Image 1 (cartoon, rainbow, N blue to C red):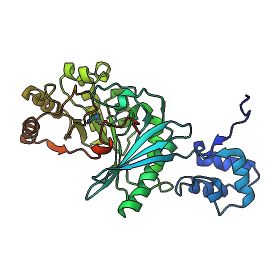
Image 2 (cartoon, helix red, strand yellow; image 1 turned 90 degrees about the vertical axis):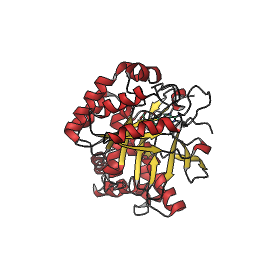
Image 3 (cartoon, rainbow, N blue to C red; image 1 turned 30 degrees about the vertical axis):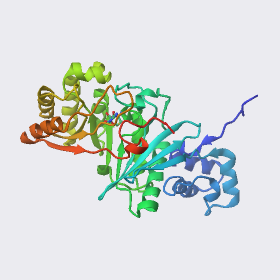
Image 4 (cartoon, rainbow, N blue to C red; image 1 turned 135 degrees about the vertical axis):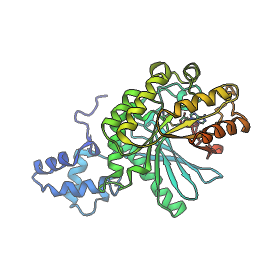
Length: 349
Ligand code: SAH
């Protein structure tokens, strides 16, 4: 079977200026582009029929030239703690997951940046799905829109925060993540504050430096999990590429430019990093750059190789860090019963 010679373009790949040029080329007014752009982003239109302030002829013309590759929430699961997990179908049939996390004060959207992941962290379920492709800016944006709507519908409250802690490594899809955030924070998009957005990375030094140079306004979190090279390399292969010293130097550079604390995500596992020497190493690492530490509860991903450390070990960490002036919080996991917690996203449904 022959494929169609001229495949329709995804209209959301066009910048506003390109859309303007298109309308002018069609013999129409440039301001039409503005109207269409508003439908596409601010109003999240899923098809051209919705664009009721355009003439039927214009809508038909757009339909003949373009498609809107909108995501589709395939299934939605609700946890007993209120957490919602969306299984999101992309235009090419691939699936990613995103999560709504409600707390008393906030509603947070946890979004994916890639289909699968290439990083192979030993404790993470997403690592078992090989990386298939990067998400486009609109696919990231749409996940946020879907959660924003659920937030209003199910909780009667606005979405307050966004974390790039779903599937994939955001800094390996940097340009698209940046473009999505640009739309999320723009008055022409969702108009959300950059300081409410956190990008979490496994710690790719080169990209952390790039973010600093780009003067991004969002927050940075690093999945640290161990501050001793041999231990970190054993659970996170990225550490062979970017060992701790190089990571620390990149973070120092980030701080020198950004003056913003870094958040370290850290899981304490039985027999892996639950000894005083591990906590001491973390403390030493924390002294390099102003930071805070989130001790995240481990979410088992079925083979029992990793086990959550005892409460005593957590308190040992907490005590040492706090005594040395480093803010440390223990983060209970959410949405565990529906595999929506950190590291559990694996397209099981
Ligand atoms: N690739 C980025 C974004 C993913 S964020 C990053 O690594 O930061 C997902 C967070 O959950 C990371 O901090 C990750 O280390 C953590 N995580 C992965 N598997 C986990 C598990 N089974 N239990 C708890 N946290 C986990």
